[in-house]
Length: 322
Image (cartoon, rainbow, N blue to C red; front, side, top):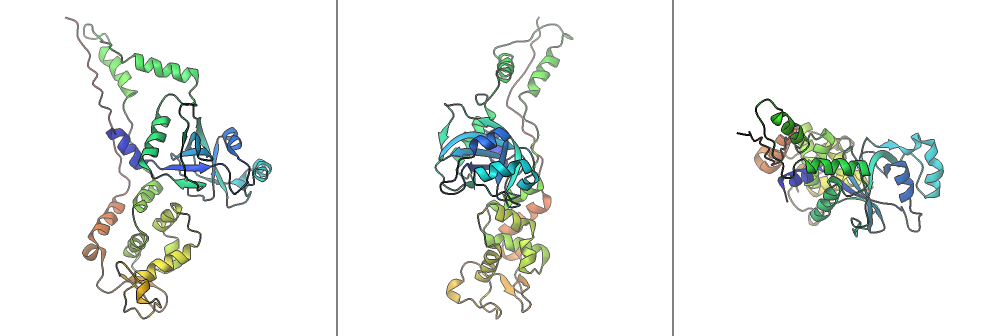
């Protein structure tokens, strides 16, 4: 795998979107294709720039790039009738975003056997395949775009630019080089947080929040951007229950305000619950001294998204006729 592909995969969030929600529900593939949209049940699930593999059953039929933030479906009155037809809830719990669609050619269509309707794709080989198709030139390109692609390719096939100084050799090569030079990649804050928490367990996410604030109640934790980002990557419905459970499991044994038997507690014990339901680290516990790996992640969060410049390994050198 090339360096370009590795870095793209590390930044790119790729999702699977199934086109029938519920057993026996009609397939809405043609509808969202016609509208050039993607839909989800969360306003923060898909972010601009994310790629979505659109499936019918286990078959990936198209790939779409999200172009904007998700919006409530009820902002589009014209969607009410088709939503009812396809048994999609027309309310403020279903969201849509405009997207750039690419319907796959017959040779590109493939199987991806994941039953869940909307899930983030984790399998590296599947992400590579989707990204390769999206970045390639064979899927849903107009004759004009294919012609342009071939034109760009032909300019670099065994051509030598030669001539006396001042005839435009270097200028022409620099113009061509821009087409094969990757632009800087800049993550948004949301993408950056989501990438960080995707590799963390729940107790680690909560520890980062408490490290920042010092003392927090569960409602405050639920509103923290890191916690919200973690929930976006899961299908957990009872959010408060998850936060309470994680905090109690990782509470020190001598905390008198948590009624959870010792057998149900496991892993690292760092949290302490006060009588007023405020959570904090136990006395003497700190990220820097007790969980240095997590402290390094905290430092990374303080730096924020980093601009990365990628340059293709293409050597363009004018030749001078002598």
